[in-house]
Length: 357
Image 1 (cartoon, rainbow, N blue to C red):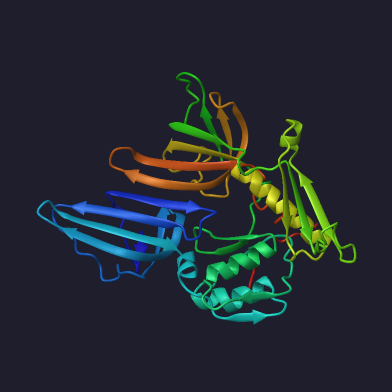
Image 2 (cartoon, rainbow, N blue to C red; image 1 turned 90 degrees about the horizontal axis):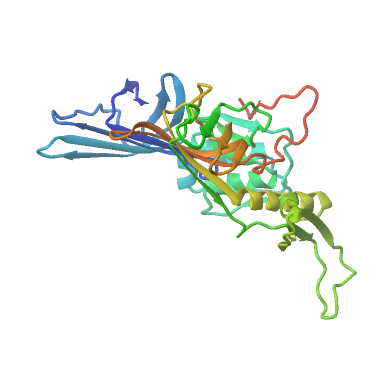
């Protein structure tokens, strides 16, 4: 960890969490010595810091808490913190009221005042939200998330501290293979693996009604426009499973918006239906990259009947006295999360666009 120009690379134990569905990735560092510790003056709550593994950035953020415990057995230090999204999660956003606000306007007036200057739009399309109302007391992250989701995108913070608003690149190459075969195969590199499959929140058919007509007792009022969008889960329908869901969303005033809303609900349904939790030795994939959410990997598990490409949604890097270097990985089905961010590609495409930089 580096803070205030001071670097320490000797820790008794540490962990770094990162989850694309949870804002503000967190970390915890522990140090113990019998001889006593004098912390540098720069190691205080609120100080900016960076974490890296052999030169590869893992997290850029700030210290939340510094705790010291001194006793007869020795001196223990525990430091916790989060990435740059921590301020957005904690603090209320400036009051913003605009009729037609773009993502750039939200970032300029809500995000940048919170101290985040590096922002990247990672998408082929940035739609306009006709009306964005940020209520007093609403956090900056809530305001950003509302605007991002309205455009079919999602915000997160990269390890180098860049706030990204976009979606995953499902055309990216996989970073390596994770294998669990029966017996003591030489290919095995998975310590343990659990797979959860659920149908509780999954639907075979989702219908979105936008600008729906009023019900008059004997039927729908035909004088009002009814926008309907219907999508189906081919995997469930192929199994003969019928689980319909109808959602009324008066904010969908065009067919495209109703269709986007239906597809979003369907992808969320598919996303929640599967999760693979894997624990591996070390902190890097077989291709050499540090495990980072947003990567894709090939999973082969004979006991679970899995052989395919999956999307890394979350991971925890750890160093413990008992197990040494380990990583806990949480995979979801590939191509089921924020699927429309890179939907349309132009011939000369620049997927990286900086706001005001």
